[in-house]
Amino acid sequence: MAPPRVGVGDVAPDFRLPGTGDREYSLSDYRGQTVVLVFYPGDNTPVCTMQLNTYNSDLAQFEDLGAQILAISPQSVDSHERFADVHGFRFPLLADEGTAVGRAYGILGPVGFYRRSVFVIDASGIIRYAHRATAGLTFRKTDELVSAVKAAQADFSQP
Image 1 (cartoon, rainbow, N blue to C red):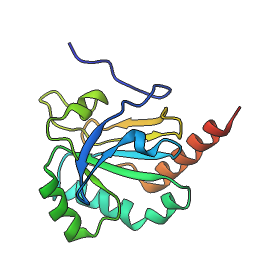
Image 2 (tube, helix red, strand yellow):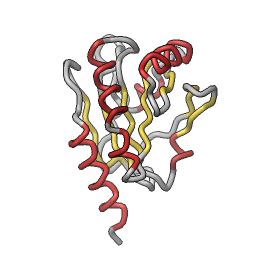
Image 3 (cartoon, one colour):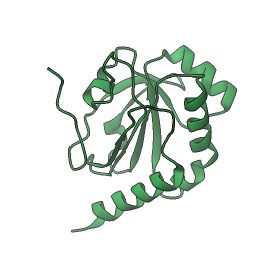
Image 4 (cartoon, rainbow, N blue to C red):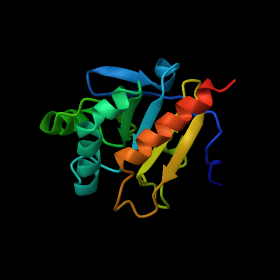
């Protein structure tokens, strides 16, 4: 039986994963800040490379809103470090080698592979935007994610 899928309005499952920069990252470390959680299938693959390069090029749009990007895939930290070094990513890449975090977010495909997915989590840890791709040949554009961040921040600031 598949675990229930989290969605908009749910508390985002917390996690602690190793990542680039020789440290561990936890979602709860970012409480009080909007987080863009990017699940991508693999390092050095064409669409994933294009996706992460796009977000890296547009990083100022997220930073201007105080949002943090965390990118997660099932490859090792060593693979992530090599991938980040080649492309100069300025946000962390986290290693979910056992796919437990992917499973918690309901983004694993039928044979256990990551589906390209993005979640925007507000400052209190509530999911405000969720997109799970079925094919993974495209990715959510920066404008859509920036709009989702702004909406999450507006929802969080409402009494």
